[in-house]
Image (tube, rainbow, N blue to C red; front, side, top):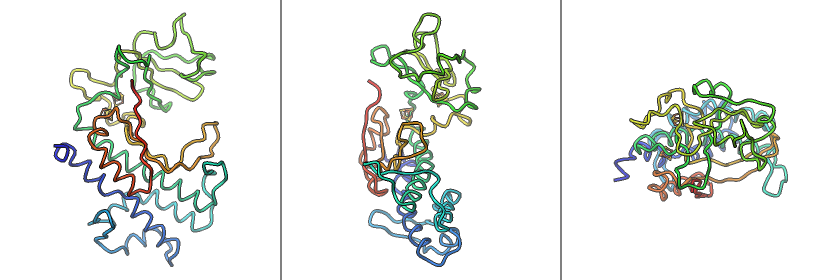
Amino acid sequence: MPEVKFAAGLRRLRQPVMPLVSMLQFLYLTGPFATVAEVIGELPEPIETDRTVYDAPRTLLSAYLTILAGLERIKAGNAALCAVVDEAGQPLDPLTAAAALLQQEVLTAELEEINSLLCQPCGCTLCCVGPEADMTQEFFEIPLKPEETGLFPVPGHDSEASRARSSTDEDELTVDGLPFYRLSGPRLMHWRNGWSLILPRQSSCPGLDVASGRCRVYGARPQVCRRPQIFPYVVEPLGDGSETRRLRQSLLAVTDCPYVRALRDEIAEYAAACGLSLVLSRNKA
Ligand code: SF4
Ligand code: SF4
């Protein structure tokens, strides 16, 4: 059953691009090639690895050419765009740091496509609604870029007090004498760390057509809506507001999501093929 239901997403999940990226990186950085496109053009087809057979590796890699062209910067000896440290906080050498940042970008792009393909057949709206009455959370939050706030015609709140806090601070924001998550309906909030859409208990995103379960702004939906519920963490922010990243080499899959529950083995296989440790986590309780 999952084979049929998730056929399109499974095809992509079983053909992870990362092993090909590692191969390409080695060939390009050690060979006499001027450009990454030149190496891709000379790859044999098909390519067989110990896990799968790639019938069209050139086409698969070419879809990530804009990102992979970053290898040309690495070969030219230019440093990574930001520093990367290991778990002990020690800086990685520039080549390892740049390669890790590039892997993070490729995986983010690939998983955006895979997550969309796996979500579509689920008929699920869990990411688009606030907590149920019996859940412990008071609200769910959808982080937004400033230009994405215009998608949602709901009241907003932007004050000195909101900009001095984040939604999770213990010293929580009150508006008109109420905690921000008790205000009626969804609300756009401007926090210290940027904008977000707050979905209080038993509310739904204004973009959701509740009757059909469809997103009314699907083509323009916020970036964060494109990327659940399998997330790459080759590197992660340090969380101190700096540009520095920490090497983590993990893949996070959130088990609230029905396709994550249905495809645990396949997701574990994908993580292993990408050289990442799989972390399963439950977010909503
Ligand atoms: S914008 Fe669309 S995908 Fe994102 S939470 Fe709202 S309804 Fe869901
Ligand atoms: S929980 Fe999973 S299936 Fe449900 S809406 Fe979110 S990504 Fe889609």
